[in-house]
View 1 (tube, rainbow, N blue to C red):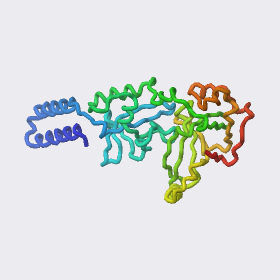
View 2: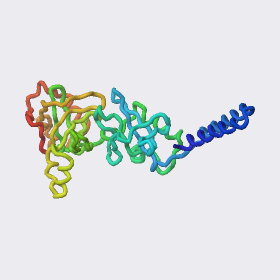
View 3: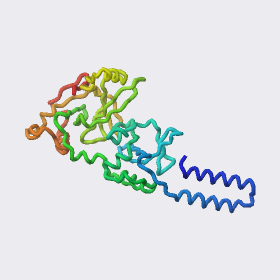
View 4: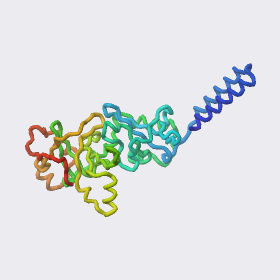
Length: 300
């Protein structure tokens, strides 16, 4: 229970008690209660970024909203600071130890992220405490349709040795082995590691993969210093924050070198705009430089 709720509840109990003693003072008591409530809700409480988190929420169109939250351990949930009626279950994906701001999957549209890291990465002061009003102002900034937390990717270069292109009958995308999100997922009662490789032209889409083993088996291999399972992954399906997708058995791998210029091959990397140009010029139904992946397994 926060300070505002506590004072309001005390004020309410005080009114009830005094009414029992003297019903004739009803108007006077109501006036006192009103003053106490107004003063309480006008009080500005400061928040340290060490004690709050941030939640990212996607709608059906993939539009993002961000809310600062406090952990409510009594109810096992995260409560929005700007609106105490909004809360999120403690079971939402926890991305605080990652560099990701959402899970590119329509089945996981709410995620918990590190508020301090988020503000640092976008140039905001993290040494001060923030009032509720200041946090709401930051939310307004983050929730603007112009705000893109992955805008820095525009200045990245993508090394050819890390790139791969995967296509289905409907679309084709390029991925980088260094741009991914790893999560634990329960499948048929067994935990396993799943990996989302971000679509480099749209970080709200991804290729969902797994290693073909359970988390228990993975830990046993690690204990024996065996990391060979990381050398390959099994493609499960393409996912998106705003599209429902089904498992696809018709994946194709595209020979990236066929679409590169000599200068690109010589320097060994692509700029973001070059990635976009390659993808824009491709049509999976007309391209013949593909290899069918019958078992959907890629060696990396």
